[in-house]
Length: 228
Image (cartoon, rainbow, N blue to C red; front, side, top):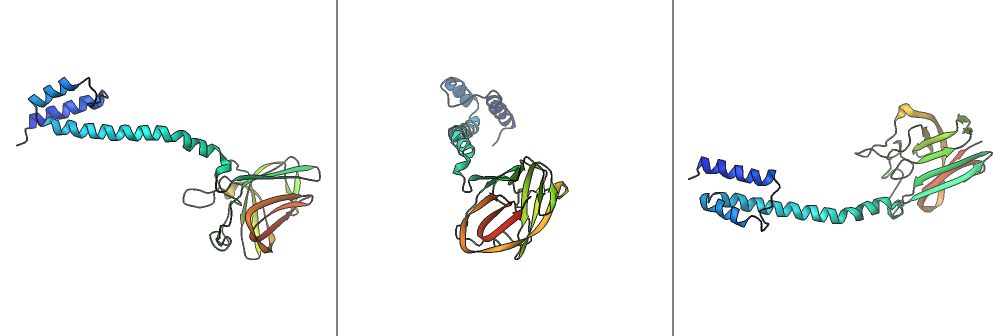
């Protein structure tokens, strides 16, 4: 029969070990344990369970410690990502334009109208939000865009796309759950452009900057935005 006093005493001993971070497996405590077991036999299974739990937690901590540097290194090395970083730069008039993005690949999937639905805002790349920077004021599709740094988003359509420049930068491109991480209240410029079709598959997303604008190609879509 269970003895309330024994249970109370056993709980106190186990708590003492836990609170003082004592490892019952260590050789420093065999006589202490032997004494406890003699005066309180019901204590033994509780201590045995504690020993097992301690060993399991210790192994988890050791494995985590060993693996963590490799995981952090892989995260730091963005070139190893499935969608590696890329940059497109060029001059348009007096302005220097740079676009920093991550370049996903088709990999046999249907992209636009498939995994990226029509009429839904897309981060125009992968991983972090795509960033466009200009060191001079420019005119984009007839609209003024002050010099600065912007996140760049797009809503695909069958025949036309809507383009967004947003003042928030540095955020991850998608929210948890998959929604695009664009705050509409921070959109500084938006417009619609016609979509062209490529005759051959463009496997990897690629941005280019020319002397009269910039654009990107991916899968069978070809989007160009005029800049002055």
